[in-house]
Length: 476
Ligand SMILES: Nc1ncnc2c1ncn2[C@@H]1O[C@H](COP(=O)(O)OP(=O)(O)O)[C@@H](O)[C@H]1O
Ligand SMILES: [Mg+2]
Image 1 (cartoon, rainbow, N blue to C red):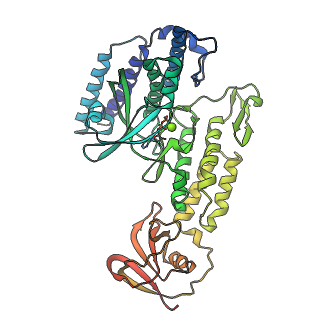
Image 2: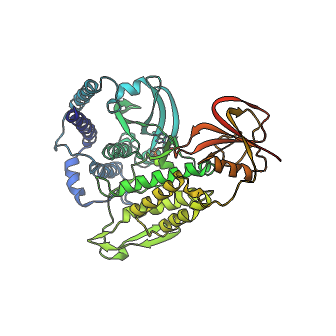
């Protein structure tokens, strides 16, 4: 049974690559160009044709060279098929075979088998976001299962700029689609809870272009940094922790140490509070070649680092680039701000050490896991010497309707709902809020197991509520 699953998964992988490759290998003169491009290691990221290239055929030739260059890079992330072309029909047959195998295996729908029929059956399709290259829509499959549909954005910056320069929508589409293909390949090869899952893909003809590709992936919600700054510390800590778990995996990935060249927050999404990377088209395993450490300059807008050159490569450059980006885009904003007092020194150490690139992902992760442990076990409260001056009346199976006030950062926008480790912590919070006269322990908890508590201005609306526990302050 297990072996069969592996075979089916391998089949899926292979059919995906064969399909994609057959599509892309149809670019004329691929074989010849492949040899010419043999030494080219880096992805040609510039759309600019060489200055001397002005005639239409020369421009097209230059564009096709870029397609092949990107293709070479994308191919490094998946299994190579044998050389030579095979008819498109064969790919389609393989896809069908795969779908049938999966159906037999799972007795129904499974993520790996999603394809064109899912795209056609998608309902309630809504735009969720776009970048330079791709547009992403959310869609409901089978009524409730929501997925993301990712495809090349015909009106996006990449396509428009390319068509303006080269005039061939079909070729520009191919250039852009290799990015999506590379992303799918990486999603397929890299398996980690903080990398979005690829559920399947579909090739179909549209907008006068043959065989456009749509990736079907796990759905998330785009990351809004401004919004994040207003969320409780625990949620922001979770994002930083997921990010470092991801970076630790990328540093030890089956493809080698992988760096995300475009690390802006919009390349990540949130799925149930967990951070996941969605944009992988700018990922690279290339570690900068060098002859001396002078070649190993890691440049950022506000800071440069010189790394060691050893065995012809800048040591750890990919891991360090990721870490410094995590520091400048995430940690400085999300980690220390409004953290529990006792955790601040540890969190500041994490921020400072990553900002100075003193640690690798291993050490950074260990420190974050330690912070999680301290928080989860309530050890951050141990040194709290504050004794509670006020007495409380404990009312079992009761809650308070109304009597809300706002506080920051609350889990509820029209009330004051905060996460606490225990009743003692809730009492401390209540005593620190001038308006607080009572609080209700809800039966909801956060991802760390902390309990959500609603703080109240009074207990006028006290009524019975099974499973909830209310504490009312006595005296003035
Ligand atoms: N799976 C997803 N669920 C929800 N939103 C997504 C998903 N993938 C991407 N997005 C949103 O779509 C935008 C564009 O996707 P991305 O892969 O970054 O495209 P590009 O390569 O053009 O930057 C992202 O910035 C993100 O906000
Ligand atoms: Mg993006």
